[in-house]
Image (cartoon, rainbow, N blue to C red; front, side, top):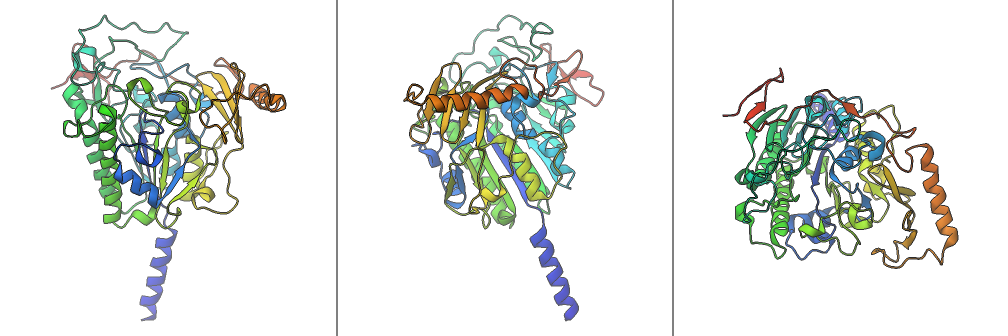
Length: 484
């Protein structure tokens, strides 16, 4: 009897000490007010419940566009530190996230985590840059934005609109000026990739089912990894233009196709949370739901009450709706306006997992005390708003200064950035300019070169996953074959 009791106590202690699982759900281009917890009139019941049972982060920052934001998330750093590119990456680019960078997946994998990336990667599409070379055991997804395919196969227009005629062949950027890949309407066919191989040429019909397929892959990974610990990174293709919700969801939202797709994402997230409950994993799994940047207003997103759109450094461009859910650990129905960002996920997950941080400079903070609702827990004092190579704004506490525009706003009183206080607060302007100037010795104020900027990954002779003639990159030897 004593032996049985001792064994029970030991097993209970092991359960308590077990490192948590992590699920990071990253939506593409979802606006601040595109989901119910942040004021949308669109029906998102599962996200509403997630907010009731967890925490809303209301001053959480990404980057203005896709690739930099994902670099920020994977490395714990400002995007410019690890991915110094002017905009985003494109198919068959010569550069990507350097394989020498230690990613969030690698940090957790070293601690014994099973790791999977399901969805849009967008940190380089050459074998050296793919998730399986950056700490993920498996990968399944479209490796970049869903508009980076051919016009004739639906990548440049919404469903129901006429498919544009084939466009002229894309021109590659000139070496030494912009090595980020093939641009324009003549980009190669859109691939669906499993690990390092193209397994499908994604046309319009395939785009309609992509969220469902990602969801099934995510659920399968959770079931296979239920004995834990595991890290699932689920960067959805949705809701990036072109807008391709499953046909069964079209017409269900008051907000058009982008609202329909948001509802499908809500249902997807609900299925994941329900499976965690079913498997008894809810109380040992931290789930984050966020977006890679602000919503694109020209495609129907809403960033209310924030000013601006995707691609800008007004709040609407990079302050993103973010939910944190961990029953029994994160106080239910809680909220924080502390300054947080995508670069905080790596140090936070590492702390919670008992993992070792990379031995390089990080910009993120451990948010575990904040998520637990501990008294006195804080976020960042200062946040720097980089757009590509350029520092465009800086925030300290509630004060934000747009440097070139010379616009000063008190975000606590004026979240919409509508009342410029520059003339009334010259001392505050000087203080924020001094904070910006200090970055000149680290990440610089403009241009790709600065002391704290680390080198890009680089390959010679990059190739698309699918050539125009139908040959696909498949196999460990990197050779091409015809896709069946």
